[in-house]
Amino acid sequence: ASCLVGSEMCIRDRDTVAWLKIDVFDLTGNQLQEGPEEGWQVLFGHNDIFPKLEQALMSKKAGDSVTLTLEPEDAFGESEPELIRSVPLNLLGDNVEPGMKVEGVPGEPSDGRFYTVIGSDENHVFLDGNHPFAGWALKFVVKVLKVEKATPEEVEEMEAPELLEVADLVKEASETKH
Image 1: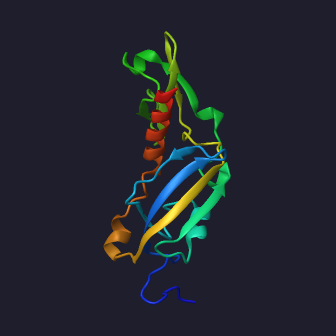
Image 2 (image 1 turned 180 degrees about the horizontal axis):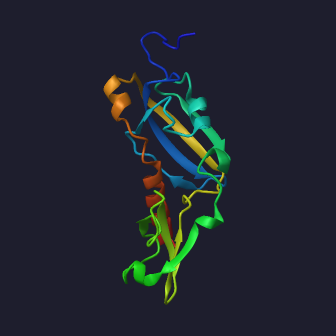
Image 3 (image 1 turned 60 degrees about the vertical axis):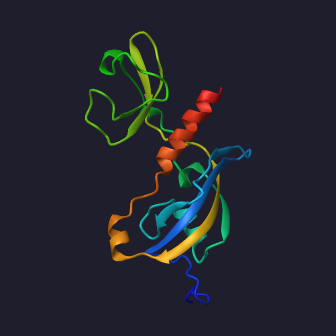
């Protein structure tokens, strides 16, 4: 069945663009991330958001909301101990502070991951390549702001929303509060 109701577009399985306001909470109700009011532009059918979130948004139209709880394996994955690394301090210089990001492990071929500085001692810096929300079950509250058919140009150029960067900013903000 088509999901055109009157003239309203709704989210379909491929090449639909939706503007989504995505707020993320932990299971005790603490807000971890507030999506921008104008929403993130998401292209459906291209693995830009978590598959279970995408499924839950199918056939939704502007004004609809979805609340969904995802286990770690359906969201940012489990925390992997092997992604916590120690590197000699001299590879990173003197101005190393917790929360800083480095791409790849210094002195090794890049694995394309960003590592967060989680601490240091006199000689070493400790890096964590896990996403800040790895290992967490999370509640997503998603409001659909607008839905359109993607143009071929949008399909070509669209990038996944910067959930990761926003999550990192939120983590840094929460760390400075303590």
